Image 1 (cartoon, helix red, strand yellow):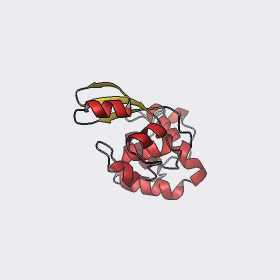
Image 2 (image 1 turned 60 degrees about the vertical axis):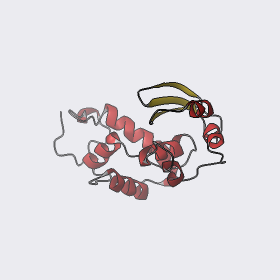
Image 3 (image 1 turned 90 degrees about the vertical axis):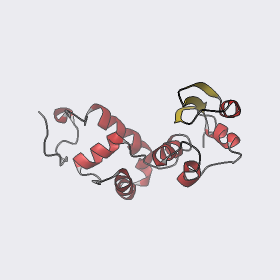
Length: 157
């Protein structure tokens, strides 16, 4: 685990107290938003633990939901998790990789089918594919490397 690799997190909190700003190294605040440059070590120090090893521990923190917990576990702690955001949800459903009615269903299917050694990178690659190729309004199917495998019916030219 790289304890000092930096990571920028944006929290949507209720107003952040001065003591929390100091302990988490908050860089900027305003309108219930706090931006902090965090490392796994600073998270561990702030919450007096050596590691928050699962999403339940992280979700117990104010302002941290399932997606944020999985992003922290993947990016900061190097665990093999996939946080399903709008891009991953869209790609998983359009392509048929992991169709589901909600993000939890898609997450469970991806967790089951994506090999462990690829989970850390799959999270980022699926997000990028959803942002730049399989975009919401007009997907760029002609430049998609998996077009022949994709089950999306309304492909564009």
